[in-house]
Length: 532
Image (cartoon, rainbow, N blue to C red; front, side):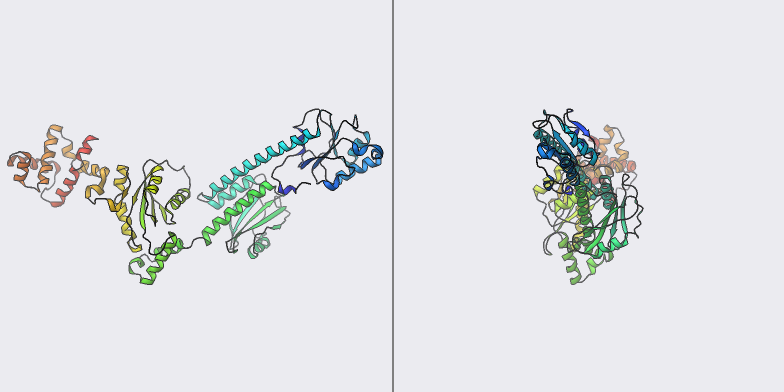
């Protein structure tokens, strides 16, 4: 005996199976069962094989039950009637070794009881028929498993979209002929999905109230059912969405006009599991990040003015968000995209966010215009840094910091972003030399030089280069005429005259300390600017 059809994934019909067999096989009577699910092929020479059969089988016989007294018209008619009551899909009669043709009484009985009757030639062994069915069944199962795998991939992509619940229901109703409604714990509809093939549901949420009440008030894994005299709603199934402690967080209700196949039920189970994951994450997942964010958003000054008890409470929430302890060091990490591929257009940032959360073992990650920022307990060793850089990103890795120092730690890391972006090299805050030119970086530095020194840079090289040399020497000697003249091998008056030309061209007062400082910084990038 075979298992219940709901436990099987494949759906091979009698018509599909017969199309795979040699054309010598003849259909003597078509009982209209061609579109029905074919469960198995069962050779049997018993006078009454029905105790060993389940519905939907193709029974094969070479006629042994019809020899002698079994071949009387009454016995043959009773045999066929028993097969029909057992739900047999068809009867195949094999020519030889007992009969040269199908008995007429058997044909008459099959017509009377409307059982499909096949004539199987001697050239087609029963074993070959069974083997052909097994191969077709295996092929069909493989196809179904491929479809299930693709559907699960689509469901996972939906979960990572910007509207995961809506997108997940859209995939579900595309793959399963149902309409779907997602309800929250408050009984309100959160999302809907409609399948064109299944028809648009006319069931109002108020009509589903009794079913929803049973789902939200019960406990344990279960499926609640109902039925409505509305197209697409002959069979309505409700699945509760439960927390890990069996609290009801919502419900998914589906409607269809026909029972779902095993493969379709598998898709529904996957969707229910992912919806439970989403609602758990939103309502009863890790609470520390949301508590921490709420406290800081509502009371931003509390990081500075809060008492010891309040600060320690925030430190505990921070530690939980980082899978750490209150005393463990933390640091700010900023990621800058250098040569990483762009995420697909319109793709949700959730996938990127989850990638950085996983790599830095933290729930505190922000997607920013320059890349991302994270707070992590990790030291970010060379192995982790190499993994990130292989993805086309560079990092600014902050020093260890306390909770109250995080804003300043972020600013220190941010000051190195321009250098990292222009150099294409990751940086650690504690290992950097903190000079103005180092922090400014080549890109900003050349922009500064081009702007401040534009009148001089526009001159021909034979005038430009001497003026730049005198200006650099004069600023390097802190404005000393004699020191500059000696360093450059020029007369003191020549230095005065050329500095006067520089001041006139730049239209600025070179006696101001800020002007001198800015020009000195700009001169550090002139060579790089001219070489570009």
